[in-house]
Length: 419
Image (cartoon, rainbow, N blue to C red; front, top):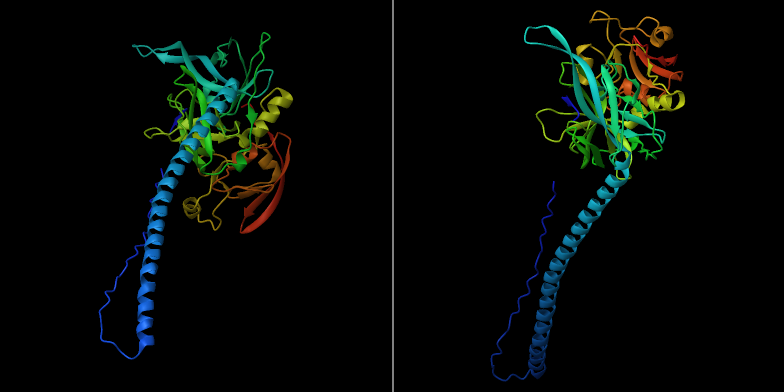
């Protein structure tokens, strides 16, 4: 993975009813005393001719009507398709125009160490670009953590109308170990400029097949590029790298075929109502139009903390876990197949961090966290994603599977330590 970035054919078939007419020749026969019988035959003969004509008329009419209806249906179908495409194009255009006012391009300068031809480490300046979106009228911006690395020396943003603001403050970044690749910025001085903020949507209602639109600073030079597609899947877990050797585990992502190019990282993925339902984060290398976005609901706890305190405070439990699948459950010989499994400390590090909320609540290695309040931890919803919906200080109840039994464990969420 790299960070950033049927047509159905209806076969119409018509069944034609073919009407055939059979004419009978009248043969002159000898007179017979049964006059009534002969008269009857004459009457029948006289009746056959008009009946045949009637059937021919009806058959021709049905055939003509069938051909007309077929041609008319095709005309209406084509018109309806053209009208649908036109309406969809207008909708995307309107969304791009309105939402685009809240999308910004982010330019970053960072200090990095590089080696010269003699192998000596030398500090050098590096420039990069990404995307973000405005969430408050006083200039708070949401983006990805990897857009503004820890070594950032200066950050500037450019609005859709070209207005540029330098010396932007980095309010905070999620921890490097967090699967929520999120950061918040703040324009220090608006200089009287009126901003447009984005509308926050609800990502829990998103379904596979829903229409979505991605807006971003493609390749770091094509500002507010718009692409459209659908939600192709959700609950995706990927490992993404930033090209410098650093890799992050990202959980509970939307998958979309809306093109997310380099430079689009941190930009909004919006629904047809123009509401942001995801933060564009990564693309699949070696594939075409397979992108990933963080569901916006997984970040609402972070947004609340920034808006209420002016600081990014990320809640955490303090456990090292893996999300269970059928294969992983089989690997650990578990009877339960879904949840967050706290891995044994023999596998490369402590299971429970010392002094963490998990330790205070009495969680143990090999416990499986199956729910937080009423939200299940499964292949579509990760532990980190659920925690991101809460604020620091929230009291939650964990459902924990231990030794074949379900336990209820109350816990108070604390802020991720700076170290």
